[in-house]
Each structure stands twice: as structure tokens, then as C-alpha cells.
Length: 237
Image (tube, rainbow, N blue to C red):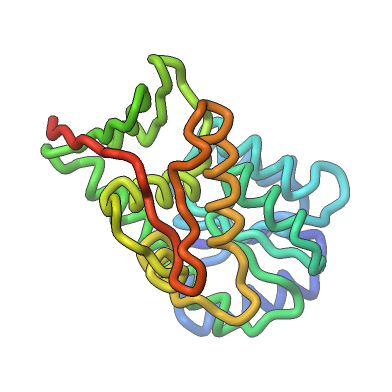
């Protein structure tokens, strides 16, 4: 596995490089968003995952992630030293696959890196499967071959995280899905204490659905989880 580390903190970079090298993982370090974007544009296929710090001089991690997503779906895990939810929300909205708050346990970071790569490989296998599925609800179509959502033939922008959550709801209409279950199925990891990433994704999805007239699509079942309430039709390609 080849990891691109993007952080202007040289101590953090050195620590991560030493840690991952113990597991025989290749690492490459750059200290700015500009350098990361330039490197990935020319050699994105050389890397399996990006570890990207939010707070950097020059182009911040949020903007760097946003620009990377214009040309690549490479898995991205973001690091932040802030406890504020807004940073997490923005990171996930611009396309980050996961995040960790500094200081962190390197073993937990290692586990999360493996999980997002595993998810990425699963998604690649799905996209190469001949029996791709589209899901229709109302005037909306979720196309799994392109991971896109359309409303009345108009493209609705959604992040990778929101796509996964919506797809899992559409696969299980009328079924109560717990937060633990949603986390495991859409992020391939267990729900941790104070982890609000799944709630953030659902909140973002609800806003998208509300904007196109489906404010009641996801029902909160207090003490149990969430349930998709609209009829869903599946079509195999």
C-alpha cells in the first residue's frame, strides 16, 4: 500500500512515516495542498489513500480535498486538531471518506485507513459488476453505475459518503436501521463514543431530499434508528 501524507507539521509526518513503514507500507510526504494536487494530477494511480491535514498554510485541507475530488476518487482521510463539528461536516461534504481528531492513536488511524481502502475496493468491484442497479423513488433516480442522483433528469450533487447512506436506505426501505448498522454498512467500522459522522451524513442527506420535496423520506425512530418511508423501485441493468 502506498500512502500520500499531506501535512505541514514535520513531526506528525515523521511519526506517520515511521509508523507505516513498520507495516511495510510505502509513504510519500508533501507539506502543502498545492504540492499534493500537483502530485496526484500526474500520478494519482500510484497511491492507495491520502492522509490530509485540514489546517495548513496556503491551500487548506478542505480546499485541497475539494480540488482533488474534481479529478480523483482516491480515498481521503482528513486530520483536524479542532473539536468543532463544523470542520467535520465540511470535510465530509467536500468528499473526505473519514476523519480523525488530533491527537490520535496511530493504531486507530491504521485501522480506519484499512477500512476506507476496503470500502473503495468493494465499490470498484460493484462498478465492474455487470448487474448494476438503479433505484427510483418519486422523480428521483440513484444510478449505482455512476454513483449519481438525478431529480427530473437534473443532476443533484452528492458526496461519496451521502451516496453510500442513500443507497443503503434504498436497499432497505421500510426497515429500521440503527446508527450502528448504518455505520458498519456505509463506513465499514463500528460506531464509537461521540462519533457523529453518520448523523452528519444523514443530516446532509435529509437537506438534499428536503430541497427536492422529500422532507419526510427518512423517519427518525427514537431509540432505534432511522427508516426510509418512500416506495422504492429497483432496476437491474
